[in-house]
Every structure is written in structure tokens, then in C-alpha cells.
Length: 201
Length: 188
Image 1 (cartoon, each protein chain N blue to C red):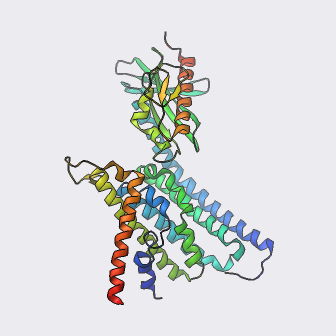
Image 2: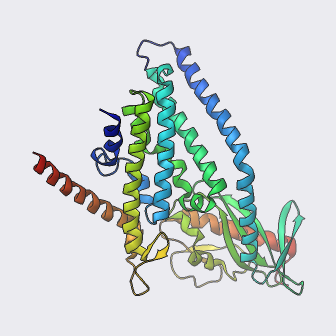
Image 3: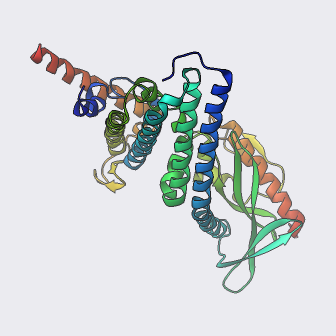
């Protein structure tokens, strides 16, 4: 697999949310506004990229029996760093994401990529995998939160879009709206995939 | 990844090294970010003092019995109310609330939640106006949680699905009212 393929793999073919359906807890919880969705996507990408780099560098020295605790320690350190960093320089975002930043530790997307990729591949390939997966996670989060914020509040990035006459659908910013939107998005993606496959086949 | 049979000491050493290195890096990050975080907290505290003491234009810190109170004064220099940061344990972690009260009539003025780690969407709704308004003009005393519109001045309406968080806030504010009464007198 060449590097470009590794990169695009995460964007579409093995997209963590719509294809592998992992990391759904933050996906459903914080996508009620675009700002939160984007910040969550970038924070997760940062943790993913840094831990894939470190783990692919030191994988030789980690005995197989303790690889999971080692991965968790490394991931947790980067998450704690992100938590402090956001609190210090982006207090608004840190407050609205509150508990979900520390919870990045248990996002199975991150541990999953260490197991499936970083612990078996050289560093330069791990970087491309992490960027692809991180961007793949982020774009779905942004799409999901765009739909939810637009329908639920009539705004995009806090800017009024649909005007005062629009009656917001409150359910879209509640957890139920996350399930509905995600279901519709995954459905649309599957239809597109099937079309592409039947044309190629 | 090393597949051969590895000794126990090797496992212990690996985990220890990773743990120590992580701790060292994080302690540096902690040193670096703490001043900024404290600055934001100080700003938030000041904002909270003015939000819970309506009409106050300046405040003064006074320490009584080991508690730091913030006395709010209006433009003509009269005391409008007293506030302090009351703490208690919530569903997960500590809840810190700035409680403002008017000792001259023995009532809570307003509350502002400074820090909490409650569940977003459920317990975190303790920061919403609708819930905080429960405490406006409450006489000092022990409050009671109810599941309906409060009919008694000592009753507080719970948030559906967040009983533990609302109970913590209720207890913290009850105690805060009594503490302010103890230190400043009340109802006289």
C-alpha cells in the first residue's frame, strides 16, 4: 500500500465513523455545534498523530505482554497535555467540551489504530495513517455538527443562517438528533458506495 | 514487537520507564500552563462575584473563620451582599459554586457554578438559568428537593435525570446560606 492510499484509507474506505463505526461516544455527544465538533476532531487527531508517532518509534522495545498498558499510558499523556493546553489557551472550547477531552483516552479509534497500524508499521507510514484517520474522523464530525446546528439552532459556527423566521428543531441538538443524523449520513454513504461498486464491477 | 518470552523484570522496567517519562513531560506541561489556567479562573471568579451580587460595583475580600468572603458594595458604598465559594462533592468530582446572599434580609441572591465535572447534558444542566433561578430569594435554611413546581420557599425543583447533581447543589447552597448567616447574621 503506498502512502497516498494509506492517507485516503481513513478519509473514506475505512473511515472510523461511517465505515468502522468506532469512536461513537464523542461523535454523538459533542456534535451539537460546529465549533465543538471541529475542536473535538482536531483534539482527537492531535492525540492520534502524536501517539502513533511515539508508538511506532518505540514499538521494538515494548514487550508484547504489556503493549496495551503501554499504549494507554502514552495516549493518556497526550490527552492530559491537550486538556491543559486547551484550558490554558482556549478556555471557551475547554469549557464546552469539558469532560469529553479527558475521555479521548478511551476513544477506541485511538487505541485501535495503535494495535492495528502503529505497532506494525514504520513511523512514516504511521504518520500518514494517523493523519488520514484523524481527518476522516474530523470531517464526519464537522458534517454531523453542521447538519445538527443548522437544523437545531438555525446557525452555522454561531452565525445566524436560516433567519429569525426559522423554528429550530430542538431534537437535533439533543442526543436523539445525533443518532438520527448519523444514521442518515451512514445510509447515504452506503448508497454512494454501492453505486460506485456496481459501476466498477 | 518483541515476541520472545520476556522476563517479569523486563515488563516492569518497560512500564516504569514509560510512566516516569510521561510524568516528567506532564509536570513540565503543568508548570507551563498553570499560570494561564489560574488567570482564567481568577477572571471567572471576578465575573461570578458581580453576577451573584446584583448592584455591586466593587468588592472586598474579607477572611472570617478561615473562609474568604467577598463583600459587594454599590456605588454609594453600601453593602449589597456577601458571597463566597462553597464547595461540595457532585456526581463526579467537586462542584464549586459562588453563592451570593443578602445578610440584611437573610436571603440567597443568586448562585453561579464555577467548576464542576457533571455529565454534559444531564448533571451539567445545574449551570442553566432555569435551575439556578430556583435559589433566587430563598431564605437561609435547609432546602428540600421536589419533582414539581416549588410551593414552599424551602423547596427546590430537581432536574429530571440529574438527581445526584441537583442534590449536591442544594446541599452546597443550603450550607452556604447558613455559613453566611453565621458570619454576618441574618434576618435582623
